[in-house]
Length: 246
Image (cartoon, rainbow, N blue to C red; front, side, top):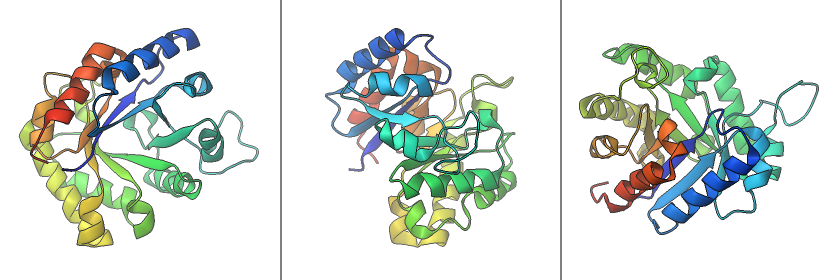
């Protein structure tokens, strides 16, 4: 069975390092028994150092394209690595970045040994041509060895809870998109490498709908609001641990 990934994107939460520590500690306790699930917590930048002493796998919510330089307010992949990060989320739709910028960040992250979690999605449901083009623009030209060390997330913009539409995608929506993703990846890097790249789902994931996304073929999820609740995040990880068909 393939390893599952349960990635918590805390966004700009919580408000203090103390609360972040307590939240991470509670999640670590809830999820430590799930050996089939790689649990990754992505807190805001200021909290990374505070959580590095815990037995949690850390990721960041973004990084810059360069490792150092005159880039006010930015954080480099090398800095994240130094703070104990192993993963970094790139291209999340809430950041509004260009496809080229995402590609450059992916290359920069892999250069220092971070695993990029690359978000790709479309603005409206039922537009596979748009999704295909976004996938091409965001991933095409990334070296095969770089892609093989990455995780891809199908993140339909229309399904994110903070958008106006804000609803979880259906099992059919996700299944269709993942078939498209697998086909593209196998074309880009070959069947052996392409089939081994984990593809997750992200967009209004919760304990009630996670099974439908797993049935659709997702190898885990990028979890937003539900990752701020140890109980619900633990329940999502439990569903992944027990799921047998992937």
